[in-house]
Image (cartoon, rainbow, N blue to C red; front, side):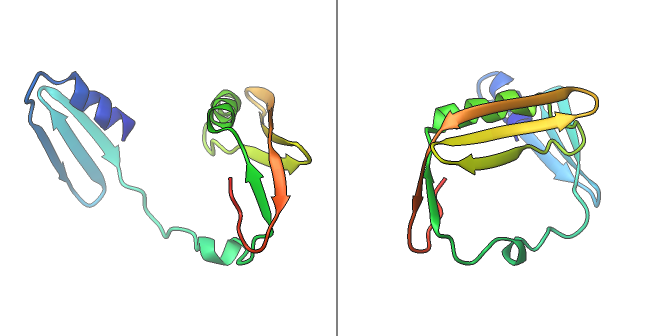
Length: 122
């Protein structure tokens, strides 16, 4: 989506976008530029079965601080999975990842962890 936004902003004035697709791909044309993307296949995981129904902790974080930490750490994430891990502890949140190819990265952010009824805030 960020590439589509970038291409649409690079257009001149009232540039027209043409969007089409087939069974496996989507096509976005902005003037002479064409972006082709492959559709994901398979079933989306049933996240409701994985996530707990009752949440008893609240975490309050500074959005810009955690966003910057995730961006820095994700540069070292495995290229295929792009997975990062988040660990919550007293007064801090650690964001980390490791990869055989790129090594390890870890960032810590301050955060307030609170117990509450059934809400989880991040």
